[in-house]
Amino acid sequence: MTKETLVAQLEAAKSLSSQVDIDKVVELIKQIETPTKITQELVDDMCSKIERCLDNNSDDLIDKDNVSFSIGYGNTIEIDDAQIDTYEVMRHISDVLDDFVNEDEELDSSEDEVIQLSNLV
Image 1 (tube, rainbow, N blue to C red):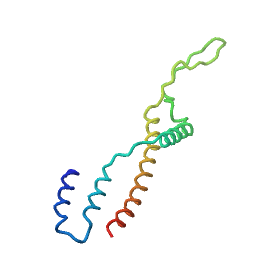
Image 2 (image 1 turned 30 degrees about the horizontal axis):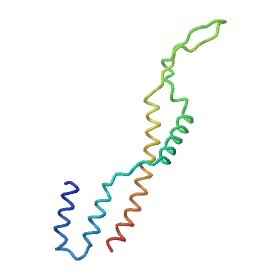
Image 3 (image 1 turned 120 degrees about the vertical axis):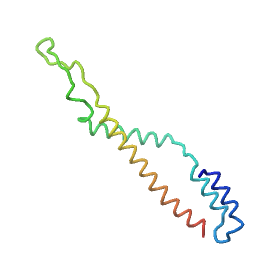
Image 4 (image 1 turned 90 degrees about the vertical axis):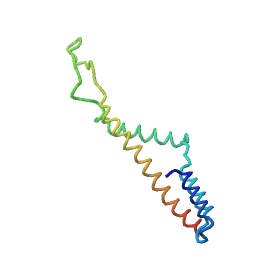
């Protein structure tokens, strides 16, 4: 069922129901699918948390099994090649982003419940 279909059905049901203000229900449905824009403050907060997470987990970020070394001038060991473990990097970034999604969902659901209850009464 699309948003438009649901709104049309609620408009049709408006004449049948006197318990709930259908206009308020329609307005709530329209708000549900309204995309939210990401603010610069949110981007800065996300970047800061990702940076801290990667910094705190820096031991996980290099694929230590595939590092190649050589003996340089003066018998010093030199790193020729070290690969980033992209799986671990993405896992840490995903965890940080999931925290933002979970925080937003918790805030939105508790705010929506209060708004819906107050609007329907």
